[in-house]
Length: 124
Image: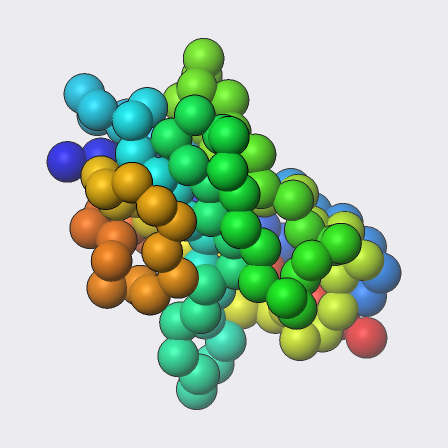
């Protein structure tokens, strides 16, 4: 089992930037694929970006390509989501999640361990 703790959320104006962090722990956390998801009020949780266990592969959903970047530093067991040019529609609770299988999956059900989430609010 992997434990995940998100941080870095907050209130920012449109066009601004935030960097989210996901601190992972657990015996096999470095070997897990990690994804970032978000959930806006009244909407389903959606995939934002994912990264393979060694950082060699990344996937970003089309709506954030060119604005968000996922990265990981296994020396300190942390996965990051750099978010630039934020838009009001990026508002939501952001979660990181881990899965032990290979491959970056976009379906939340494919992930077994979840953090508690961090709120991101982008104002106009």
